[in-house]
Length: 254
Image 1: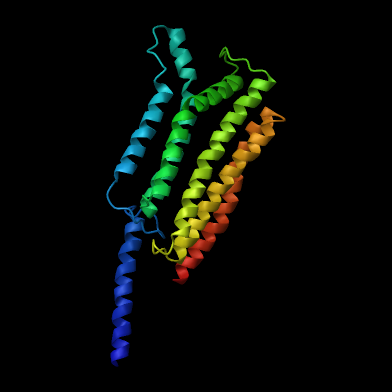
Image 2 (image 1 turned 90 degrees about the vertical axis):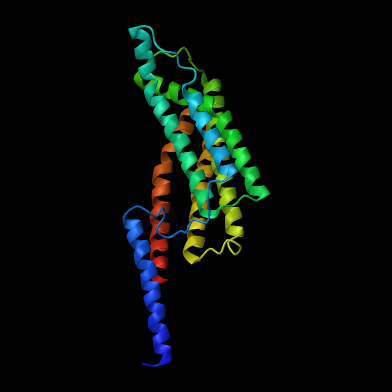
């Protein structure tokens, strides 16, 4: 066997021994993402601070609740379970998106820190409007009394507040991913990771666009503005299926 063949064989063996454990780790759930190498190390002070703020925001969702003293008060609290669950899920979704971005890139330059601070400000500011919107929504569905009978103008303002907050949060995520894409060379992103970064950038752009369109619809009809959010699922489903296929195909070629 020639020296060149030996080198090629040893390189191929090293590649296989590297790829196979990674694939096995992913099957066992030890790897967070199959095609993206997380560049962050230990939890930083910025990430720890963000986790504290998200925890405080979740606390604000229930801090106004008092221990019920009668059966009627208990039933009133139980009726607030679904609005609380939806608000909780939305905050967890935002936290998860922030966590994945932080772990993927490990960026803590001044611009990224600034975007994180603005994001935390919005999360804390919109806790009560978020809770009010979904409490009112579920009260209308279940025909429960809330004491908040909104006229057309109040409903329009409320939906504009919610849509503005929704659009702003995901616009910030889009800016974060755009910044990471700009630094793709410094971060040493491979082709698959660059494609996934573009995918995440467009995904957050879609969510932000939904918020903007809902805001504009609220100027004409608050009901349309609310129902428009149901298009998020189909839009992200189509976008994810297209980009997911492209990511898998590109990863298999490497």
